[in-house]
Image (tube, rainbow, N blue to C red; front, top):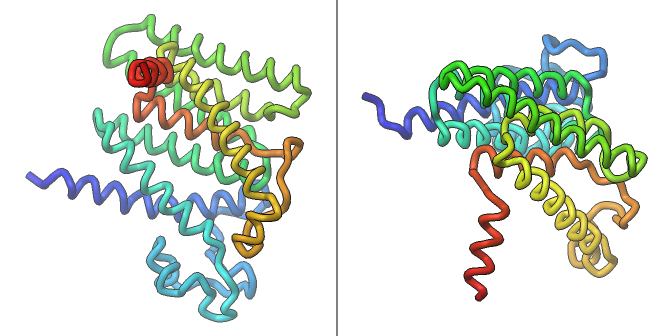
Length: 275
């Protein structure tokens, strides 16, 4: 019998490999380029050799530089690979069966693409929202099939519908200034998975995280902080700046679905500690 850490490590390595593929998807999505094209340097166009394609390892060995033209390779590539590996290992920690692990990893892979794509382009392509919803339906359907609780399927659909309705209403009332319509669409699948029990925490945490990170970005963009960081902080951020909301939805979903975070329980425990 192989030890538990072996399977945990294998899942992590597999996550690194999938993360490398996700980088290709993120870069080529909606560009008209095939996913089957060979990887190449974005500066000089040289086709990369097989030994330059090891996730993270090649990035470190090459010191984030192209072997030919020595142009800088963005940190994003290694971060996406590490993020995917971490997501897969988190899914393994919630191991129920290999079937559910595969579905969870497929869902998390899709969400990694959504997160990074929305961060850079501030839009969520419809195919990613559809993929998220379909995978969520498979997960919920598999759970209902294994438990025989068919009412749970209806409740999950209802929870997703409520999440999508509330965010659609916010999108409509704010005329797209508060959140994008893509955020509302992807919330349907995520809402299905957290269910009624986690719906409140899912939505509240998303907006709390958005507010905290937004305020932090505003503070970090002040002149004093920019001087302290040597100008590495980007352009000035204010209350009117457009900040993608999908990363906060996804972070909130992971906290509720995989880590079982309950906002009301946290508040109750905090108040008991204070009092």
